[in-house]
Image (cartoon, rainbow, N blue to C red; front, side, top):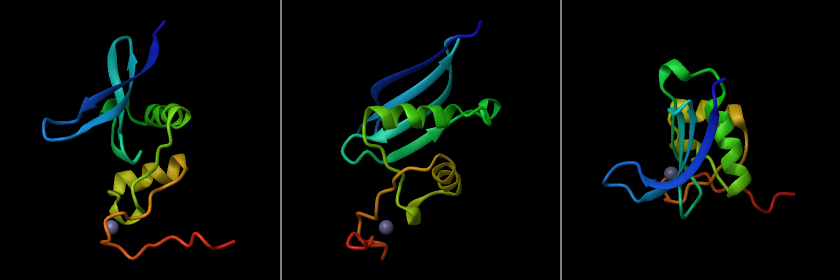
Length: 112
Ligand SMILES: [Zn+2]
């Protein structure tokens, strides 16, 4: 029986990065997917699944787990990588508007 586990901690993606939330899925001790989320904004910063583990829904499971625990948001549509955009569209959920003033994508909050 393989044992699938999701763990959550705070880690640095690299030495230059601020600490982020990290959800990781391990199967029999091997990390098969990681989801990195900015502490301040809840923005998803990285989703990493090694090629040999893709297509199994691991990243989606991490997203669902993270969203149960804190408010997580996809990156603004205009800032996404191709992969990030595909991920966001496949799992659904809320996205952040551009907070950097570089895109004209102000959401219409007053729309009924
Ligand atoms: Zn922008």
